[in-house]
Length: 208
Image (cartoon, rainbow, N blue to C red; front, side):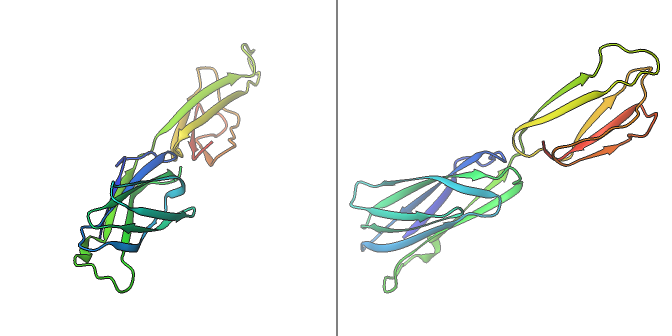
């Protein structure tokens, strides 16, 4: 028995989806009856959303059970046969870095595998951060007199699919304007340089 695991995209986006394929084969010489396989998802991957099996022309059977983070199943494969299991999983919006996923196949007790070294296969992907940010700014008044207070509302929205961390928003005030106060809400934000009389302020945005 052997198993080969591959990822459909080596650089999936955080917040997106990822497709894995498991190819389970029996090189013989005997039929592999009731061989089991397992695929446990690593941290950073979410729910298994879809599973499809495709068997070879030989009489091969397969069954499986999924949970939110694992796929386990059983196959019966004649000599020379095989089955391909394709599963689609969600990538968490907070995922980052390298994700390593290992799948295994094993024969039932009493059946010997002459080449056990190919009973495990690992697929590695590197999560890409992709965040579509939009920014709007609206003034409370389109005109003003000396000494009048005008409020500006700056709205930063992350359309995803990834979480946008450590984003810097800078608002440079025009000549004749000075900052009275500034505040932020939604997501994780902190105001820097927002002192009375200042002319610029930076907003660190974790997410909207």
